[in-house]
Length: 377
Image 1 (cartoon, one colour):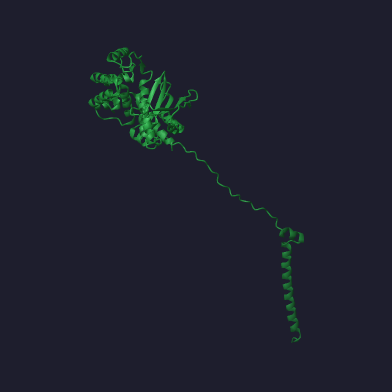
Image 2: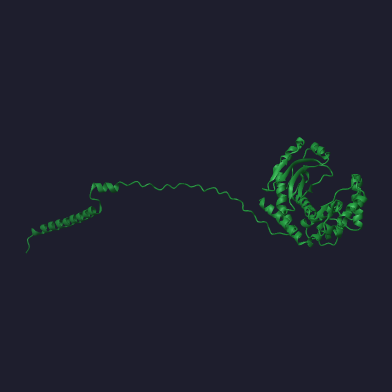
């Protein structure tokens, strides 16, 4: 039989064994910590002291301002009057500030109006240079100094209408003429140098301006040195029928306009011989010769001439002279649809369609207007 004293010692031994195991566990854990963590103060310091690494500074960059240069809108490839009208609606008008009543009255009484400024084309660098500034009344000075408008008219004309060594404007003369018989524009050929006169009072909408300038370009096409030749005036202040016939005889059978001879195969010679010969021409001569005998007689005779023959002219102004007839018919050819009627006025417009080079110029003018409109945007 076992003694009763040995039981407590067993318990004590067990407790001591458990404590020993616990101590061993703690030691292992500590050893692990020792192995994992730094063993010196220096190491601890080197880890606990964080090196300050500069955080990248994100500079707020402003988006650079990009200047967008407008890309020119290509002109539509149009060749008809409906397209032309659409392009003209995109072009701003050429209007000027209206005159005060008293100033307008004074200007209306001034024969020929006033020349405001004169420009000349430099043939070397193709720039327009101001060459003369005449003295004008104070109320016209703002119009005289409006150089941007003058240059806009120049750019409009030279940019739209084809030009070459034979047909180009060398001078621009800007005027203000408020008289009843004043003109909207005029073109004058002096020794191969064309002078374009523009009356600011008559320049208004883009439609009106292109109509006026197309008319003047028609004169350049039909009255240049390859188309006509001038003849010396051999009559006095008043031309009589004998003077007219004498000058006409120098045209060698080609059409005589009353001022110049059309050259063989020229547009004016073909046009005049087709549409102005016979009774119409004789009646016109009678009215034309009254020009030097008094304005009232001439005006009445020309009005009567037009009323009798209105179906032969595209406008009343066309009936004043053969050179105005061909220029007005040319403008109608460029600006309007191809006529489908059978009147003589229609035939005059159709006349230009017989010449491929004139049809091409028409196309260039229409596209020039549309390109000008596109460039203004």
